[in-house]
Image 1: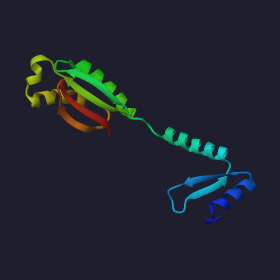
Image 2 (image 1 turned 120 degrees about the horizontal axis):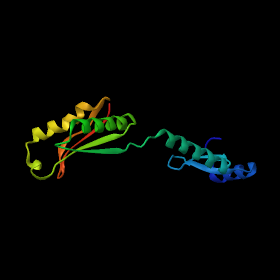
Image 3 (image 1 turned 180 degrees about the vertical axis):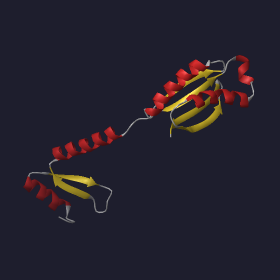
Image 4 (image 1 turned 90 degrees about the horizontal axis):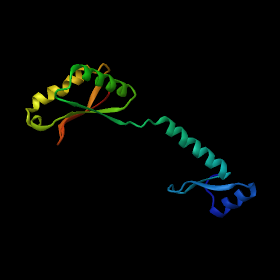
Length: 144
């Protein structure tokens, strides 16, 4: 209908038995439609449901290993990590350090952490590089 005065738009809406709905209030001049408000709400809800269905929330899963974790246990944990990565989740791998092991050489500890990374069968990329925290080393990986 083009640019019309508010009173004229309200009278046309009431003549048709419909509602005047403001679509874009920040535009100059504001954009409005003459339509049934219930129908408008229905379509808005439908759009929002479609958007929610398309989004996938990415969780950060956690695996904890220690310096003395055996190869077989590392293989099992690597298998679990690959399942999580294939689901699209990020995985935080913690090398948990206790006692004297906290003061070991960083390079040695990093090699221990990389033992499990070599066992992961699916392709991944390092989202957050190795960091030292109060409990040990942490690395975050995600699907490539």
